[in-house]
Length: 606
Image (cartoon, rainbow, N blue to C red; front, side):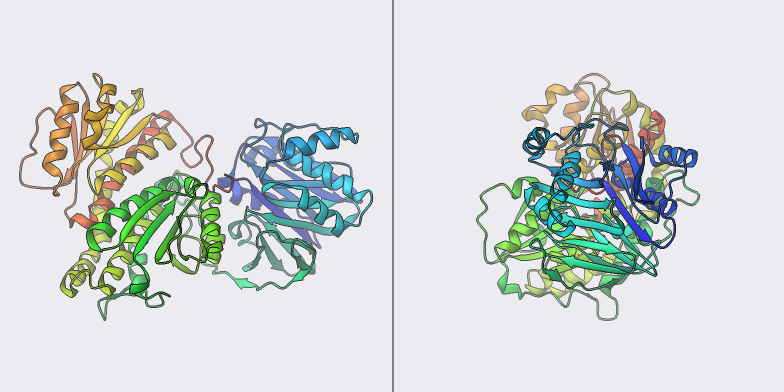
């Protein structure tokens, strides 16, 4: 989950590395550091905390050098501290690392016996000493190959060498790594976002590959040291300068951007002239697919759960949902006629990528739904559906969740039409309903003042619950996750009908409970479940839709009404107040909303 950048250039690089680390800070912010090579000596500056602290230290002592590596850390081995911060350097080499070295303890014992002395608690420092050991008897390329073969686990690496004034080695296994091309300088980065301000020409390392960067040349090699050729991709430049603008936090901006991102996505996929969905290059015929497996982690997993309801309601597919970290370790019985759909905002989620890799090894039909089309999951899937949300910087996903749901819904009704699971009239009506979705979300954003009124109860509570039935259940899970992520309040999402099977024991006087009950086929049953928690002293925040009919319940603490739409599309609207609830609860507690503790945006470790 850490961020890596490396630059070899004809001019000083420390300020460029610092700027790139700022862009990578969404990947980790426990500590940061930079190492440069100048006049045959490796110079290093490291700081605990945010990149701002590193900048202050950098301003106090000039860090010269035309070649360097930088890192922002999300701690795995060892507490966040200056000593454990990357880079980890010896007299001869300096290393930055994203990932986990699983056999670091065994390697450390071996290296200690050879006289190496360790300063940190990290697994990364093993790499520094291992490459140093191999360099005693081998040339650089051979040392890199031998070192990589000894490492078990996942990693992306950037390495500079005392005796190589114009050279950076990058290597990848599991964790993503990109290289960028520039005039008289080349770049290494854990993703393209950090490099876009310097170049739009990018190549990506595949699993097991390493590269040698010089300022005027880049060579790529497989795990055995054989040269490989790489395509140079040209990235779009319209997302280079994504800033907060007048907003206090990226998350606030990204919540408010949802009407626009929904509209952009609909415009990309819906052919208004022919009243159809533009997924014409789908590589499989309808009769070749009988079941669908949806795979994701965290918020993406919740979008998969939401899609399961749609697919079961609208199509005749057999549908299952899997958490990626569980899928990869089970004895899966792969089915020839199954379509495996992988959902990830970053497209670099390690568990999701590993599940995809497993499916590819069994030659399964694989489809990626991602926000980053240059990502590993997108590149290695047989079919890709982008969500067209633009950059999402806030760690807690908002507009990407809405985008994931929308693309899954579009795929669902497109496949239903192709299979003749729904009539042409029903398909046309569903397309027509989507035309108003952007405006409905815009109106629903106006629930902000109502949300701010109820936040204190959630902030002060020791726990809360989110309840929903049918389409509302995955949204209840997502609402609870958002409150946990941002406000650090214990919150659980449950199917409303499950309360009486155990969780009702947790209800006590004054406990805030969010009940999601749009006026759908489940409404009366959900209201009945709501009465059960009210009777035990809970303070119920009811989220429903506008309606002339009275609510079938008394003693509701507060209610928030969203706009009216079809049952299929209610999940998009009821998501909005839950995002706002988490945001304003965290704001009241004074927490860092864009960078919640212990979390990182792109989860590239298991």
